[in-house]
Image (tube, rainbow, N blue to C red; front, side):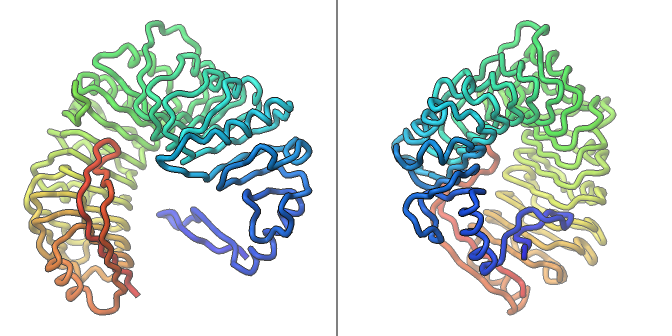
Length: 453
């Protein structure tokens, strides 16, 4: 009945779907029973207006004033909108619908997900009247601020403000005792006193900006049980931050970017005296120039590694192949400034995904016998000097090969090298390429995707 759509790297199911015929059978039945409602009316619905009470509302269009009666939404628990009107007028209808819920006293909403909705008009009393909210998702909404009442929601566990224009939050956010996951986008807190209360169960803290020798560093030391951490740090604060991170015992994912006074990637110096990044770490994303590289070798359980703006001058592959559990390796723009890389014999035994982006000086890539025996996906993007990789044809496990903005002669040679049993798709369009999540580049792109059959 249920098919796996996407798998995680270790084989566990990430997303799934129903078979078409099963979906066609169960979807209208579930709607009639009031489990959820799709707005505007789903193709399965025969009536223009539903006559049942539903608990989950999924909208991909504007909700008009009289779309639903009080009876239909009085027990609403989840509101999810996919009404993505990019660069259009602000979504006032979202605010009007939420106001209707609030004014009628229907305060049972526990999940509000407006990801991608363009500037939704949020009621100022949102947090006061929807006290049971546990999940507030405002990612990619282009909002510049949120109602202050949101940070006072007593039951809130997740607040997602990633990829918004919000640059500040009230310091009272740390009074949210049940807060577990906080996603921000470069937000800086002026913390002058360390006696402030804070959520003791916080597991995710992403997008926090740390200034030059900021007192925030001392305050951060209170968080000892974080699982996922993402920081943008002034280069003068890196040493203290790294030392604090090295004392953590349960950290699993770390994203660390070093910036200078102009907010551009800067030196990411990890002191050699530090014993190392926590052994529990499985996902590491570093943005900034690294003069020392060997410290990464001391993260034995690392599965996902991403480097950007590292400006490494020596081939990193001989060191990285020592990460026996590495599954994903992404070398993004300016992570390596040398001309050659070599994947040694039998190196990278578990690597499944490799991405090489904008390595502008790279011209030669050698893959020795038995290297990357589990590689399934390879992407090479805008490495303009790169010649055909030596030994690529020996990597027989490849399922997907993507070449973006590469020379046509290079593409043709790759096609001849890997054989004829491929489906290739060529597309031409303009789009913003994010070398890291902070620096977009625009240029014309040629994308070639080969799916091995």
